[in-house]
Length: 114
Length: 523
Picture 1 (cartoon, rainbow over the protein chains, first blue to last red):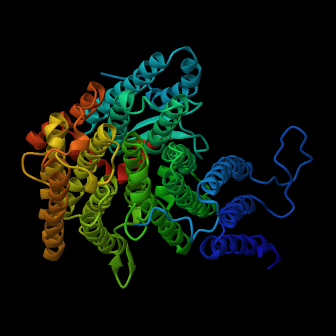
Picture 2: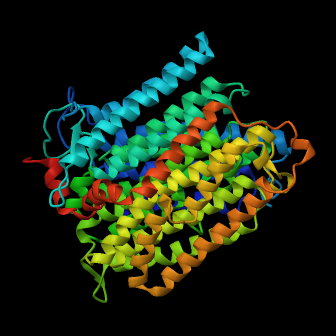
Picture 3: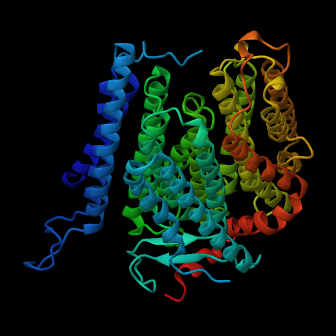
């Protein structure tokens, strides 16, 4: 049970993120929701590569014993970098939207609907 | 004729390198930069063409040829930890479409975007988008696919918001980035699910190992939903008319390519990743392919109907075409769904061929219409159909191109849309006549929607405010001319295309058994 806690955290993070995305009216909070989903997915990847008692996968100064799988960590790093780029882009768009509409409320930001 | 083994890597590397050189060259001279970008994309199209020629000539119906390039090693070693590019007929077919679209978009940009500032960033992003799309199509590694998917979405989102002075553009871009960010994250989640079970990221290895466990089912649903959302199928289409309608026309053309790259992802996931278990019974002795097929077909039919009906009541030119594009995506999914549900039968194969042929036809036809809309905007600064009228008097060539475009989209005989739609009608009729009837009726309604556009924009008396409107510059006409030439060629010789290009592609999709052995060789 105790080893499942990271997976439970993953599900919670993703669900909270989806909740924020669907029910929150503020654009910044929606961006936070997406970031939460991303953290959940990243945590999932990291958890997949971990075994109980494993050490960091550095071969040169290894004291012996099992190592954590390095590939998920590499994947997570890449995913974090991409996430930062997406986050920056989203926030800059939010700034532009605020300049044009003077509000961050999604109900008022809808000039596209015809 | 052989190409160097690193060609697939070059196809992605050339636009990527070009993207980061563009701002530097832009410092010297604007014209030089435009020429440089056209040269880069020309070189890239040449590479794609050579590789395509190589693959299509080496493929036989029994053993489709797959071109493998391994990063950093000569041979594949098991377990596969390296990144592989696996280029089969399907990948290169999509790469051809993407190259044509972006190349035409860049030529068109020469005059169309001339009055804008910040063009160095525009061209950089366009090249990045190209690199991302081609990467998605050529890669054989699931995580790599995710990375290129994100590159594509970031670049295209920034391009949609290129006219930041317009509130609607920024709003559309925000919608798009939210949709793509969620889609990409769920793709990553699905990849993690697969990785956790099979300890592999390579598509060929995964496809060989897949068991259709409970987690695999979740991963399949996540992948299909996320990628179909990015392909713009109803009910997940709401971002598509907004971003297609508000981006500059050239960007819309590149976006069509990005959408089709996601469609390629759907095809790759269903036919290759899950290809080995498609015919196995899932529940109640119904095989998996029936489940997926009959899941896709209703969504496709709804897409067609919603797209056409919404197109009928639009007054904004580009939004109207965007809804027509939704309907066209519906036709492709209808063909794919029929091909899946009737897998193994002759008409199932016809459906798949029709769907594949329709991918390239849709890209050309819808692309041409977007370019015509852009030309009208360039000449009149109007998007709304209510404000237009009598333009045929001032813009002869654009009018001719538009007529060719609407006839091709609606599937009228002398043009390419007819060839692929006929295949789709034929095969869906054998699966269920109602599907074919809906498809034909909606095709007619689509023509009606465009006849309305033709009437209100081009016909009618000459309006005084359009007195000084002139034909658009030559580079724009030339760009539209390229698309028209391909459309007419495909329309006149559909058999040539079907035999030489579409058949090998369908073979490559369906003969999944050879995929692993072709990729991994003797290892």
